[in-house]
Image (tube, rainbow, N blue to C red; front, side):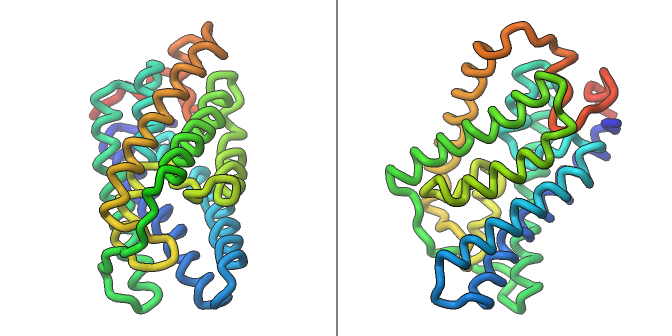
Length: 242
């Protein structure tokens, strides 16, 4: 059941922290375990992220919906699944959580707590890949929730992200919060600050494209059905803003 807003924000913060720690920590471990083999490093990073994301959504989904991504929250609000006020409150919690997770990952591997990434990623191909990656992720989430199959979303999201590590040139960030968080670790999964604004614009564009396409594919879904984001929850509970 979706809880009061303060509890949901805490779940989004902690879940986002786990997500960033998972992505960055597994990247650091991969570099240590498989030095000089970038393909194997990426596979290890992708496999850990896919499996961990599945578990994290299961952990926190019943509390907050398990968004961990401002684009998911904004699309949920656009379809009536949560209020715009709550969606805008989720975003800072998600960003703060991802920054915290980056610091935690650095600490777990005895790195400086904050190291600003120098990995530039914002080529035209990378930005186009982020539009595609975000569009696909949003279609996976909302196609399932808008057809009453939200219980399958944790596995589907994990599988999609694991695959998108390889079929997109950007390795599928697909999330403004994780894009910001990954600036704070100059490691395998990092991204240079100069690349982040372009990524965020591309991710928002992918989200907007998803809204348009979902509205055509599922035009008769009601607001109550749309409220079933990532994991099913009690009808009307998302409006509780205490």
